[in-house]
Amino acid sequence: MTNHNNLDKETLENDKLMKDHEYDGIQELDNEMPPFLRIIFYVTIMISIAYWCRYHVLDGPGQIDEYKAEFATPAEEGEVEEKEAPKAEAVFVVMSGAEDLAAGKKLYVANCLACHGKNGEGNTIGPNLTDDYWLHGGTDADIYRVVKEGIPLKGMIAWKTQMPPKKMQQVTSYIISLIGTNPPKAKKAQGELYKR
Image (cartoon, rainbow, N blue to C red):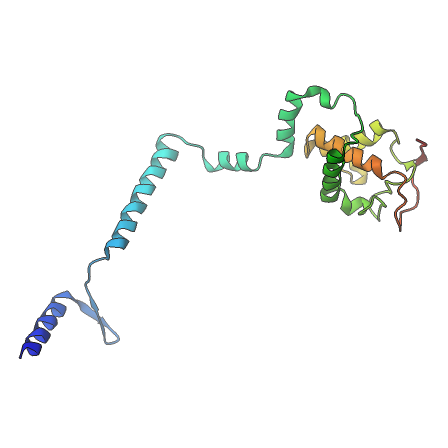
């Protein structure tokens, strides 16, 4: 008889919790929300209030400001470097240190390889950078000027808008180090002969 009474109490409790609707023969209990879900719900509300205060009431940085900070162009970063070291670009000096040449090679691989080949041998787009023939002058300063200013009519972009002066000097120094290396499958000579 005790078991029967327990069943009756359980049935009565379930009847009180039972909602009035039924779907496909399934009835739903009207249970309270579990405590951990309630905590998550309240924490979410507090975070949203803090967010609203930070970005709307206190005028915090908006999405556009964060985007500009995250994706500042190298030219903008270069402008800061130019202000700090304005003489870095005044006269081009070949950098011969191992670190500078390694950095220059890294920049060359990232930016120049597609047009000038892995070893500077040139391809259908860019000229050979390893011989003594140059289309736009063969002095160190001429090579730096071409890297900096580009040759827009021939598809060579101006890297001054993409990288700071030190990086342009590093990549130019690496290109100068390629002269005379005679890589296999080098493109035929173009331009005027310049002897070093």
